[in-house]
Length: 315
Image 1 (cartoon, rainbow, N blue to C red):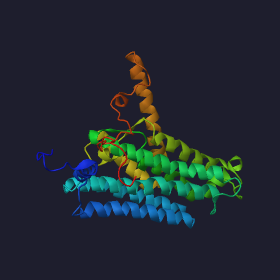
Image 2 (image 1 turned 180 degrees about the horizontal axis):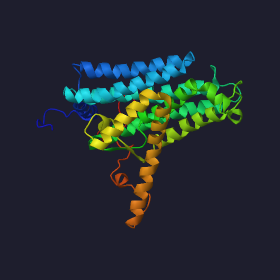
Image 3 (image 1 turned 120 degrees about the horizontal axis):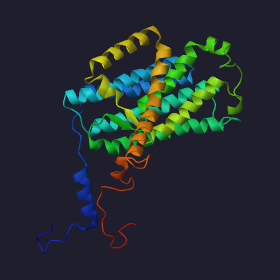
Image 4 (image 1 turned 30 degrees about the vertical axis):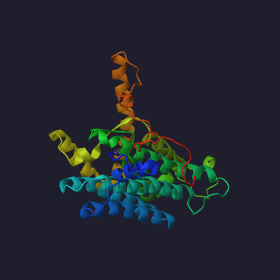
């Protein structure tokens, strides 16, 4: 407020500058360990893309699972060391987009195509689905950043991007580990890619999982928060089940990964069906979602809107 009548006010430019300065927080130091873990997440994702470029699909899938471990630990370490903040949240989302959005899509593109290529005849639909997945992952991560101020919850809205990447990588590992068996069963056939119509059943299924998983990321289906469950407290029965899963993972890693990740992808559909049944029993709309009532408009902005007193200088 301008209390001096002889002193002119700050004007439109001054008000806008003061508002922006109030929003900007200058970063003087970085939390070392959480930042290193998030950087490890990003490094694994970029290396997975490089592996896809050279046809090392299984190694690329394993690196994405390594990125998931880094992603699981960075937030926990930040809270334990009391160094969590908006910088870590933004860096984490940027890393997740590469590791769990771009990298799985590129791996599937190379799995389906079998060679480098983008716009040759028959490849345009494959290009669209490959690009569609990272776009949906970006929207999903942006929505999570907007909604995360609501506090920790036991469920996500929509398939989380690490869960999406886990399903894709499980399909890739199964293909690389059991190519001969899948070929004997007629699920995988050799030959040059010539369009979706001529795809073998396995590659067609992998592409379908990529597309469906992309849609589930931006859905409102509830998915359990695995990170809080594994790194938190659980019942004795749940702990025994976790130990059994670890034994199966060590004994039959590829099959166990496929079953567990696919089951997680389908769990959202099951929880949504249960919620619809409960709504129907209460006489409500079966598809009603209480979270939608408090949802914010994505087009709104926290930056104050200044009155338009005419064209500004230089406009």
